[in-house]
Image 1 (cartoon, helix red, strand yellow):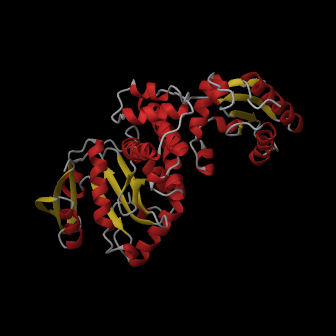
Image 2 (cartoon, one colour):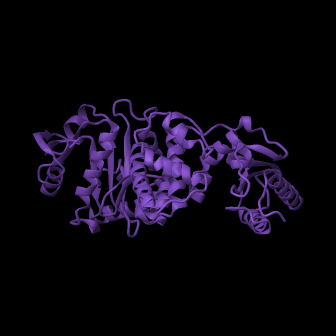
Image 3 (tube, one colour):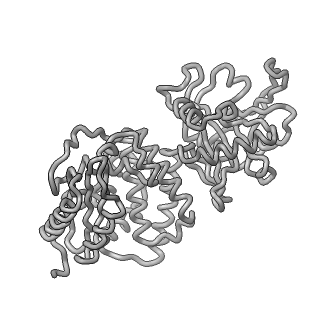
Amino acid sequence: MDSIITEARALDIVGEFCREITTIEDSILAVYLVGSLGGGYYRPGQSDIDTVIIVKDDAKITQAKMDEIAERYHIKYAIPKGFGSVMIREHELYPPYRKSEDEEFEFGVEIARLKVQGKPAWSNYPLSAVPMPTKELLIDDARIFENWSWREFSPAHQKLSMTACVNSILMIMRRYLMIEHGVFEFNKFKIIRTYRSHAPAIINEKAFELIERYLYSETFCETELDALREFHAEINHYYNLKLLGFKTSKSGLLLRPVIHADLPAIYDYRAEFLENGDSMDGTSNLRVYNNPEEWYRFITLSADPRTCRADWGPDTQYVCLRREDNRIVGMLDIRDRLNEECLHYYGHVGYSVRCSERRKGYATEMLAMAKEICRVKGIGRMLVTCVKENEASARTIRKCGGVIENEIFDPNDHSITQRYWIETSR
């Protein structure tokens, strides 16, 4: 066996793989090469082998079995980095991508990669009929993936290995290109150049040089790796906030838009408020929705400028999670613009903290994070209101820079509403 796998040899290995899997499973529709072999940038002795297997919906073979076979090829031929085999059932090629949430990864990116890079290794499938994932689907998938990453990994970016650091930075650049510009660049040797050509806000020439060196099999010292880790933390923070609406605090809180997987925890949050008889501010009418799916549909429509109430504007629902146990400690919603009613009584932001987590400073941290999210959204002055009798809420608002403008009588509940403005640039 040759120690270095040439491109021709790699194709032979894939051919053997295709013959085996089509022998044991008669519901396979097509096998495609993706990655370096499919994209035309295979490097002998360094590149892995990635395949996508499209099967009928009723195929008996499982992803676990496909992984087992692929791992055998990885070991048998000593393939660098591995032999990948993503199995896709026919209906999964089309949105909505339930696979994204079920398996917690950016499945929409896999579909895009298949359409952009896919090179037939066995048979063909009419990929032209498969839609390219929309910006909204890519954002949803990225939020699911980042939520998984938050839950599974330490936020201490300085501990990232060289490989993890480089791959994560390239993934963030690729995500920026897809979401902001609709550009799908999967060739890792071209990502930096393509990224730089699309007016990015974050540029670091030293980091780019280090990544290029790594891609061409050069190493660098620990000091240089620390510099790359710092750049990773910077670019990750910026684009998570700008593209996905994710904001973290130094104490270990994450404020991010709701995803479908949050529903059980959100309804546990709701139950605590109902049990205590507390007002449920900043939850997009959660109190009145007994059915979680109905509430999720409501907030999804409310967040989209195309489907939100014309007289209200987009309204995005957020959850606030604590790092140590991934518990929802608070909820918050942000309205992009104000109608007459919001201008008087509700403001841009509503928020609440569950009873069992109060007096820990979470409300102040949440409002501070919301301030930065509003700044990115282009809201220069953020209006936050509270009932005059709620001195704790008023203190929170003032801590975040709130300056009271006036007090207004609310005829609906005969209360006095205090209206505070916060400059988001400060």
